[in-house]
Every structure is written in structure tokens, then in C-alpha cells.
Length: 406
Ligand SMILES: [Zn+2]
Figure 1 (spheres, protein in one colour):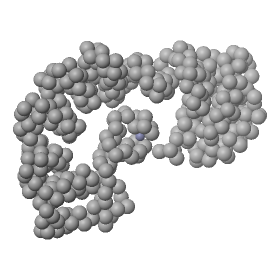
Figure 2: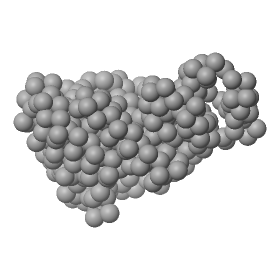
Figure 3: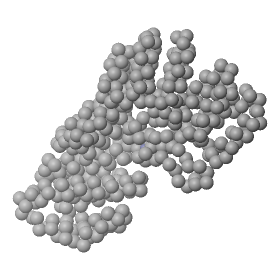
Figure 4: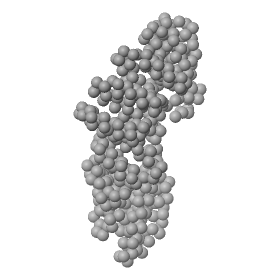
């Protein structure tokens, strides 16, 4: 992904440039000096520069486009792209200077103004000047309210600043511009943002406000898993175990593949309310419904081991190990059970047979967008900042280790 980022950005800049070019052509015609512009376009430097751009040879593209820009100081789009290329090269100061100079030009149309400001906002964002970037993107949107690129960048900045309500409003504006098939994705992101707003209310112990936001997240997206977890936590904080149990059970029904995220909570609740068998029944049900559910097996085995049944626990754990040979938690539980059984040689042999080809990881997860790795499930990627992109990583057995299955 990262290798393509500069090229992608350059292409987007180019497209933005072409859009501006259209508006600008009209302006130039009004001015009666469009021949200058054609000279730029037809110069070999311009064409070569674009070719280098497409081939991702940024330095050469800068050289050629720089020469093309030299032929015509008025060629707005060429200067704009040059500035963007400086930014991609990490020369943020230079990019800012180029784009600021373009903004000084008299007679910029509204659209041209918006496009140059957008470039400048991206420069500020890249340079870490958050306030100035926010200001620039907001100004772009004032000039061009449907600028999706400005909205996306604005939302990411707001998220970084933990301005969740503002980010929510921005995403809503984006979802109004989106095609129908992007609807579910937008709803899911809105739900994550509602969940963050709810968490803030929870931290100020404003429970009714927190409940409202978590509930709204679930209404937006029935698979808004963290909202179920948090809503139950608020109910526990309100001494309402019954409601907590109900919402976590609802999570299990809606998303059995994520039910394990509520295991600790459901188990503690079952024990606290004097009916631990409720939790073991749940685990058994999940295993019956999905033979692949190694997490339910692991949870159930922990229960059996604790109640003096290490042999039964071990059977479950061996079955779980076949499903996911790389989960460290299973191995640790196996060794505890083996210890309880005084390392019975036949059982130890079976374990070593099952693990012959395993490689160890702590519960590995990977971002499908940028391949960032994490040892737990994350809802927003700390690297690419996208929402809900993590999947459990399964690693192929040792004999074909080069391929990583996702
Ligand atoms: Zn990522």
C-alpha cells in the first residue's frame, strides 16, 4: 500500500488538476490568452512529466513538470501538481510555499480556489499543522460543499483529535453524497463514531447519555460490537445486571463469531448472579452451532479445569488446537491442564504430535487494508485509521510458511 500512496496521491492531484483545468480554460479564454496554456500542454516536458508520474518516478516527474511550469508561470494545474509532488517527497515546506503562492493569484475561480486550498490542507496535514489543516478543509467545504476528498480528510483529522461529534457530522455529510451501495459501510462508520461519543459520556459518568449513544450505534449497525459491550458495562455500572445480560446475549445472537469478546463479562456476570452454568451452557451451544469455535472451547475448558475436570478440559483444548494451532492461550491452558494431570506421558505425546508444525503467536490479527499487525482485535487501525479492518490471522503450517493466510 505505502509504495503506491505517492502515485495514487499524484494521480488524484492530476485529476483534480484536470478538473481545475476545465474551469481555468474558460477563464483563460475570457482573458484571451489560452495559447500560452496550450503551449504548456503540448510541451514535451508536460507529457514526459505525466508519464513519469504514472510510472511512479517522482523525481523525474518533478524535473519535467518543473520545466513545463517554467514555460508558463500561469499554468495553475502544473504548479499545483508540482506542489503535491513536493509534499509526497516529504518536502512539506516547499509544497506549502508553492500552494500559498497559487492562492495569492488574482481572478482564481471559486473551484480553483477550493482545489488549491485542498492541496494546501493536505500539506498542512502532512506537516502536522492540525489547526491550519482543519481550517483549510473547512474553507474548501465552504467553497465546494460536496468535496468528498475534503470531507474524508476532515473526518480523519477530527478523529485523530478525538472530536467524535464533529467527525460524526462530517461522516453524515459524506454519507449523503455517497452511492446507495456505500450505505452499509457509512452506517458502520457512523456506529463506531456513536460508540466513541458514548464512551466519552461514560467517562464523565453521564450514563443516560452513554446509553443513548450506544443504543443509537446498535440501531445504525446491528453489528456494532463494541457498542453492545459498552452498553452492558453501563448497565452493570447502573447495577442493572439483567439488562447487561440481555444486551450481551443479544450480541451473541447477532454476531456469534464475535461472542468471545463478551465471554469474560458474561462469565463474571453468571458467577456473580449465582448461576455459573448459564455460561457453560452458552459455550456448549456455540460449539454445537459452530465446530470451528475454538474460543468457546477454550473458555469452557477453563471452567472445567477450575472445577476439577482437567481431563475433559484437555479434550476440548486439543480440539481447539486443531482449529487454531497458533493461539498461545490454548497452549498455555493445555500446559496448565497437563500439570494438573501430572504430565501423563500419553497426553504429552499427543500434544507434541498436534503441535509439531505450529509457530507461536499471541492471538494475531491483521489489518486487511494496510497489513498492520496487532495481538488483539482493534476496531480502528492505528496505522491506516480505517474502521473495522482487522481479521484473525491464520498462519499456514511450518512446511509452507512463506504464505500468510488472511
Ligand atoms: Zn490499517
